[in-house]
Image (cartoon, helix red, strand yellow):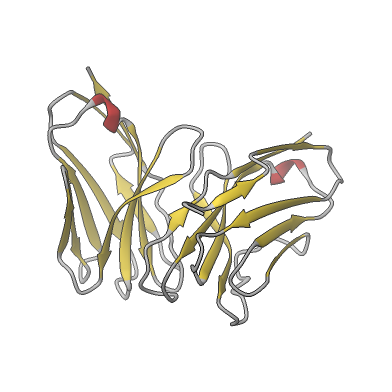
Length: 109
Length: 115
């Protein structure tokens, strides 16, 4: 069974700081890994999808890296804004997505 | 449709009643997943459909839970004889590609409260 750990569990930063969110997983034989954000009371919004053959993926201020062999992925958010406040979830895929508990981010104005 | 659509968005029921939750995937998406999220907890996999293949039911917590999908269209998740521990948000997701490669898109969820 895939175990997914996200560190830190919570993070509070002033606006403008860069964010670093860490994800580790136990089974490295994944096909891909997806990062999501979840706002309170809402569903999940896909942020980035990294295929197992890729090392990183970028979208705007977001950059995700993947080190499949060591079972790690990192999500970087540059120049954080209050609108980035949400819970961020990492989901590596074997035959299905497994989710970590998430990192709850608060960006203070 | 433009996204994954789930209904009802909220459902309050009495213990022992049956409930049906519906998911309309993005048109053309062959893969469909159901997940459950209890308050303050992570997502739990329930069931996965891929085209006409036999579904992966390995996450269903008990025989009170069942799900159906006809072809590549709507799916319904049924919970019989609901219990208070069934209270959760039930999330549906769909993907345009096969089991292993496609990006998943989630609906807003159906919030179930069992009194």
